[in-house]
Each structure stands twice: as structure tokens, then as C-alpha cells.
Image (tube, rainbow, N blue to C red; front, side):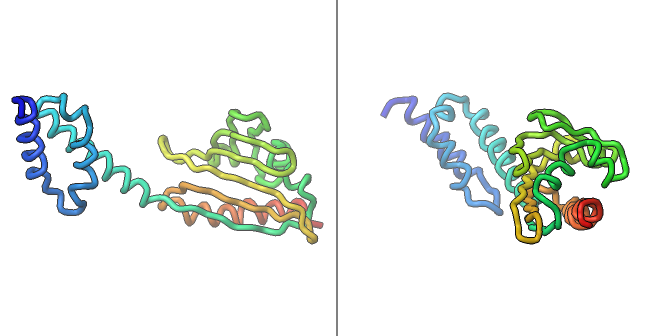
Length: 192
């Protein structure tokens, strides 16, 4: 055994013994680092900081995942899919059912605003009369992906809403917004 190998074994043993995080098994964040060549090339103190940094990032990631929810629901609107799609993409029609000016375009990567910017984000994808994909902004760093699909139904349009990555503190408002503010307003406008 060479001097470098012996030094690495001592360092690995030290790192293993000094990891005392009680709420997560050591193997979840230590073993991948122990197996990496990067760890072997770093000075001893730097290796300890790498483990602490990895732990911080991993736990932060878990916490972030646990604070988001998804919303999925289907609504029936007594209007054609073409009319429902137009009501969700044409800024003049959006202004009719929101009561405020809207910024909207069916160009991917364009920005949009409804209700004076209360709902805003980026348009990602469009399939004429069938699908809208948007990224909604929450605060400065939070985003949520919204997929809206229209399907022909014997009663009119089957409007499928799927919104993922909703911050927990905004979830109730989002659900109420979809059910009461958006879908009911669309029904009032489009259903005769």
C-alpha cells in the first residue's frame, strides 16, 4: 500500500465517522462521494466541506420537493373546442371573461399576463384548438407548468387542466382560481 492510498483510507474513515446527521442515513450522501475520484483529489478539509455541501443541497432538494403539489381536473364546457381554445388564447376574448386587459400570444416563448399580471408567465407550446402549455410564475423563483387540453365531448368540450409544481401556500388559491374564476367565467361567456 502506497502512502497516497494510506492517506485516502484515513481520510475516508475520518469522513465516515464525522458524519452525524441523524435524520438521514450516511450512505445516502457519503457513499457516492467516497466513490468519486474528485474526493480522492481534494485536500482533507475540502473533502469534509464537500460532504457538508452535498448534504445541504440534498436536504434542500428534498424539502423543496415536499412543498409543492399538483392539480388535475376535467371540466365540461358547452361550447366547441375551437371556441374554448380561442377564449384561452385570444387577448381580446380573454379580456371579456377576465374583465381586464390581457397580454397573450400563441407564439412559443412569448410572455403572457391575465388579470393585470396576477397570473403571468411564459407560453411554451401550442397545438391549435387542442393544447396549451404554459409556465406560470410564482414570486421570483417559483414556476409551475400548466397543460390545458381540449377534447370533443358530446356535450361540447372536455377541458383538461393539469398544473404541476404548485407551491403549497398557493395551492388553495390556484384550485379556487381554476374552478371559480377561470372555468366559471369561460362557461358564462361561451355557454348559451
